[in-house]
Image (tube, rainbow, N blue to C red):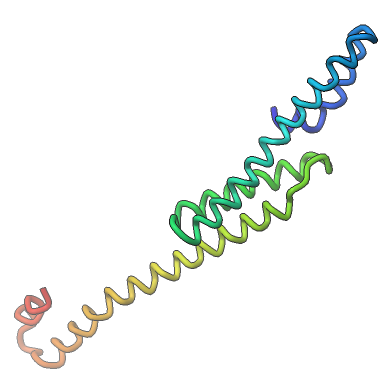
Length: 145
């Protein structure tokens, strides 16, 4: 519906103005502009949400904020491309998307580093047990716990 209003809306609005008497057309034109501005504001809202979520994804909400930034930026970029040049803000959408992907990458790296830090002592302990007591593995495994 949003895309339809952005692409075909001005033409339909002009046809609608043609149905009104000449004296009332000037009165209704500001209403049509406000409607178009409101629908365009929806796309700008997605842009703003994307940028804010991207920043929050790098600071307070690492995973969730970054995913929201990537999704809303993709939605906004699609609507901007389909608007045939009537909407702007592609740079802001790209910024939100880049921040989101950086946050996702940093989250994945953090998860890998955290897993390595947790798993390393267990692996080293297991190999130490194998080297010291090859006759009985059960007491060595219990020592790890």
